[in-house]
Image (tube, rainbow, N blue to C red; front, side, top):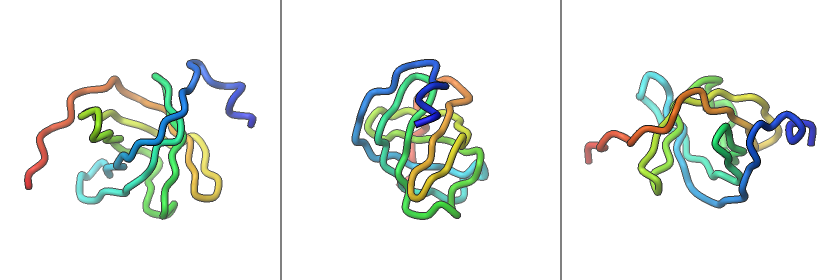
Length: 94
């Protein structure tokens, strides 16, 4: 793939669930991480229309959140680049 040539950091295959959090924090989109590096990730999402170009990326299993931006979209997959460092995710209200 073309984007492989543009990567700064090598990606590792993973299979984790994550959430795309709109910057307004009003809505979440479930996704699956297929591969990830320190600089970005490839995600599988069910609804492309629900994914904004910029969002917060929450990985519950790691308890981390960071800002991200969509770089490419194909079918049910998107490529993202991280635009901030990882931070500890805030405690969610039940």
